[in-house]
Each structure stands twice: as C-alpha cells, then as structure tokens.
Image 1 (spheres, helix red, strand yellow):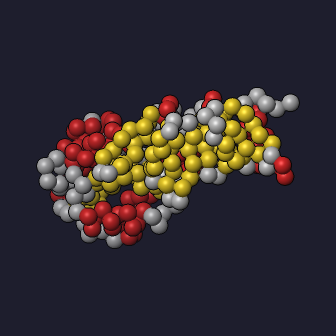
Image 2 (image 1 turned 60 degrees about the horizontal axis):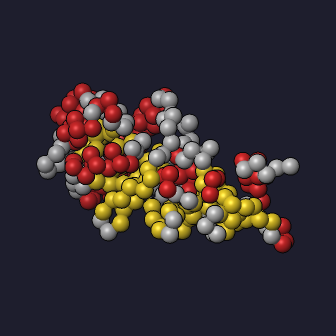
Image 3 (image 1 turned 90 degrees about the vertical axis):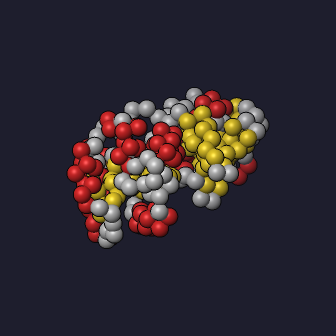
Length: 242
C-alpha cells in the first residue's frame, strides 16, 4: 500500500547526524520514526524488537559497524536499508549486502529525497507482512520493555503518545493511533474512536447514553466513548446488530 505509514529506525553514533535525518523525515508524509540507535549493538536490539520498515544505517561506528549489524541480523532478514557514510568507497560494500541506497555525508535534501523515494518503491513492490504485531516495545527510563499485544486491554491517545492499558498498568509509546491500528489484527482489535482502540473480547456491554452518545463498558468496568460513525460496525463486530 503506497500510503501506508512506514516506521523508520535511525542508526548513527553522531547526534547531529541522527537529528539531520529526523528533521528531513518529519517533513515527509506517511513516515513515523520508530526509534534511534547510537551504536551497532543498540541497532541490532532495536531492529529485532521494533521490526522497522526502513533503516538508515551509518557504516562507520565505534565497535560494531553498520556492516556488522547486517551480519548480526542476517542480510535476508534486514529491513530495507539506506546506508549513510562519510566515505564513498564504502558504497560498493553497502550494495554487496543488498542496501536500497547509500548517502555520502554531507548529503543535500534532494539526494535524501531520491534515496527515500527508492526505498518507498522497494517497500511497495514487496508484499506486505502477513502477520500483525505480537509485541510492542516501550522505552522507560532508558530501558526498553516489550509489551505482549495479547495482554493489552485497550489503547488510548494522549497527546503525541499512545497509552497501552494492560490490567492496572499503563505504558506510553510515542506512536500514532493510525499506525497502531494498521499494525494490529483487525479480527482482535477495533478502533471505536479516534482516541481509543479496544480488544473486542474485552467488551462487556455496549451502552446507549442519553443524547444519542454511545460507549462501551469493558470487563474491568472501564467505559470508553464510541464515535457515532463507528457504532454500527462495532455492533456488527460483536454480533449486536438486529
């Protein structure tokens, strides 16, 4: 799907280099920054945990290099990758490990746009993943915790964050609701409102409030508003349509 939001991981040991790519990406439509890594070890962990759609990967980093990252993940398992490097002689090595493109620092906006367009094309020509998210990584106090999707009762929007409600615990992740909706199994989760996604088997009752408003009550007693535009489809999904 050409308009699918792509989740991007930025890997570079230089803060200004990471910021440069982030500044360019935020200007692009349908792009979401899934995370950033400061070295090769962190990159390997985040690629495995986040499963990004696209990676901007610095070649020269202290310790594990960009090419080492690809070797650790496995070239056939790597997401589409755009290498960044200060030395053009590394370009051939980048293409040897199936890079989509490479950017030689310092690169201008136009060259960045060309590389990104090539990456979009490569991603679009491959079949979308058949599986949905089964876990969501969240960062807290410098550590990454993995939340199993099977444990999530519902998700609500809170400014730039989405809050994952797991029993009595709440985990905040910097992600758009639309992006999460696209990555969750629609047979399991349903977006009842622009700011709420619920697990269908957690719904206890559909509520018709005075004034024509609608809500759901979950099995833990939580009540969440339902958009009028989504009410009928929700009723069909839970078998409540007469």
